[in-house]
Length: 116
Image (cartoon, rainbow, N blue to C red; front, side, top):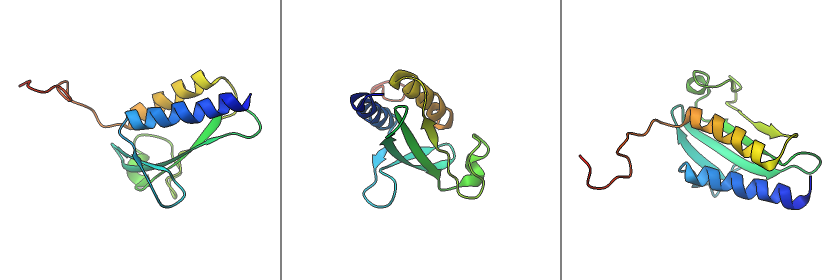
């Protein structure tokens, strides 16, 4: 995979996180935080150096709550997504699928001003 494709993965994964409400994290090993059904999820998007588009390293602050939704590490809360095969598009589709599972439900009127 070419460097420009790996860079595109990082850009698109970052855009996905921001569209889901992620906030930039200034300190620590993770660049973003995201409020989920299981509490706070910390995330770091990186491009792979050898094969595939990239990796998204994540860790839940509350592994016990997260285990009710996904198969994260029960002790550390780590829930990493390694994309060594496929295209940037398939990696982003997979990441989107998994993140949407853990996102809080939105009411049908969220973001609609003036509705009752």
